[in-house]
Length: 86
Image (cartoon, rainbow, N blue to C red; front, side, top):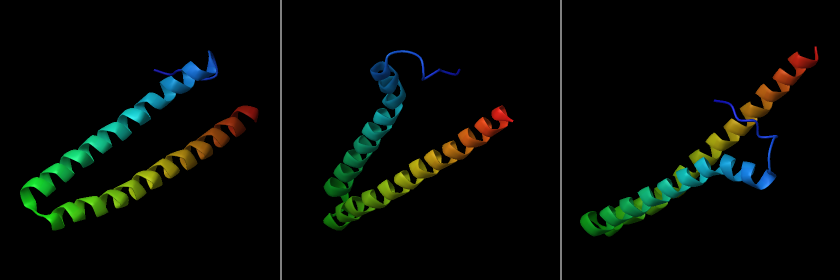
């Protein structure tokens, strides 16, 4: 299923495009909250500190994945535009 993001009202198109990203961020935060609760309540303070420190590393990996996604999208778009113009 392909959606043409160039047609329609800009604000509604952007919201439809961004909703999956917002949903994934919310689920990631809920996972971190639950993990912190379990580690802090049932394990120890050291485990809670480890969970808190590992979250930033997880965000770095997510940012790297987003960067790779955007970079590969740029390559695919430029090669498809070059093949259409030739």
